[in-house]
Image 1 (tube, rainbow, N blue to C red):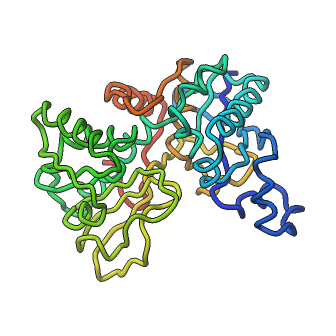
Image 2 (cartoon, rainbow, N blue to C red):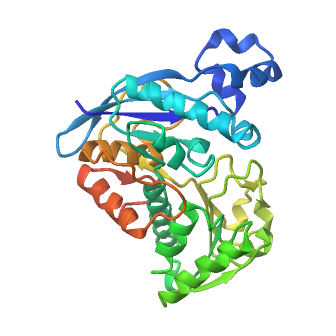
Amino acid sequence: MDKFGFIGHPIEIKDFYKLNSAIRFIPNKILESSLKWIPPFKVSEIRGIRSTTGKEIGGFLIGCPLLPKQMLELDEDFVLQKIIAAGKIAERLGAEIIGLGGYTSIVGDKGYTIAENLKTPVTSGNSYTAYSTCEAVCRMGRAKNLDLKTSTVAVIGATGSIGSLCTKKLSECVGKIIINARHRAKLESLQEEVHNRKLAEVTVEEITKRAVKNADIVITTTSAPEALFDIEDLKLGAIVCDVSVPKNIAGRNNPKSGITIIEGGLIKLPYPPDFGVDIGLPQGIVYACMAETMLLTLEGKFVSYSLGDAIGLDKLDEIAAIGFKHGFEVFLPNIPLH
């Protein structure tokens, strides 16, 4: 049976308590400061991942015990070596491809150094995450009778791999895209690339609150460890898809605003597997980054796939087709697939 490895990490310190109830008595600050000295470890074995074609695979969850803030602030080489050590555990367990979850996919050169230091191919899952994000907002837009061809989309974190893929893909079906990120030169390069395709109008806005102000659809894909805007900054009736970890939007939604907030990057598997641990999602639902790793394993496509920022639309379209083949679906509660 083909198997994969998937490297994850705690988003909050309380996530660590789920793995070992005995450490719940350790004060948060002491545990947090100790995380960087805890080596990576096998969290669980995943069983029963099945395709609608009949093929079955297995996998392993590997824990890299660092919080998002630590991955951004600690020495980059130290963090990379810890992720590589987690990858080597997956290799010893027999994984034929390794997925990078959460912040493990954005450290350094976003997967290339990790792949170079492992014998097993690596993917960030960003191609399938971008596809599922675009599909989710388009389905929600249709459900709300939004005319996508005349709609404005704001992409926050547009120059990252997920953001740039979303920008390019949505330019095929919406009227205007406002792109926002930290580096203007990269924004202007992306703007020119989409402009050359002669599809949607693309404008650059460096101030996040201005970028979201008049957008019908907002997609956030940054690695910022804090919120970048408040729900009150949004247009009434806007659709927001926040695929950032942690979330980029702050505030409490007022039902009267008509604002719809959806969690992007979620995939429904055709048959619920046994994860051997609580992953914090409904049964049979996984994050798209993990789903991409599963799909490449089901397909027997053991090559490094989604790495770096310059991922082509061809990979987004290819992994989407592989997903359809194996019965994987974008998950959006209460919204029909078609």
